[in-house]
Length: 378
Image (cartoon, rainbow, N blue to C red):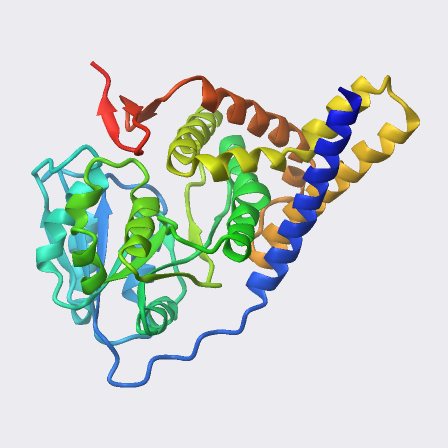
């Protein structure tokens, strides 16, 4: 057992160092050149539900782009949605942006985001489509960067890494730490080791031609991980899928700790069915857990202290480097010292993900099939 744990620790530390190198290399890339005029038009599709204290800030960031031409289409399912007064206010405040508000009452599949997108597509007037979540904030050059990527030869889909914005709760802090210490390093490693054949759902761009090639939004209607499927299906259709070294921000300041755990378990089970081999390999990420088990199995031997100290140091370094240097985030320093607790929670969630295929999403219980599709629990 000691020998097995020793080799697990070595492999885990090697992975952490590889991830650190991949992070540095990915975020050191030079910017892609701006597209030459005339600039291609972009239709921004933004499904919405409800209103949070940061909703205005997020939506306005898409209405203040240094780009032309583009339109922004807001979609809501409920005609009494609390966000509608804000949308009408923004429509009047930014008449030059071609803001359109669309009520999407139909239920076209089990994924409500995709259902809304299917009903927004006919309102898009341009050939480049950008899909973005409600809680995402971007810089004024976001659309120009996305246009440059989507106009490259053979590119069908492009997306961006993201960081968490300011945090006001323990759950939001742990979510930000998980993004920085686990998710983004794993994405950067995948970028160089196996190539990107998936998209990140915070912001995604796709060409009309690529969307038609995968069967339209209808092909994603019953999938939980619509972002993964969008990129995967485009890659299978022969299109290049790009991940841009451009960081957007998600604003979910008051996520509760319970919501954090539920989100992580849902993501883990979705990842497991979508990329089973990659998810198994993701288990090597738990360096601190394996070094702690080694320390205990070795009877608290002095040499095992070294392995435990090395694992703790490299985990905190990668969390800080990812959040502060790569993502340019502002997570309070206190959270970095909670990395050991987060790592043990992540390991527990990784193990728990193998014990079932049930997820709760928007207060509805589903079973996730091996294809990654949703099946309602009766």
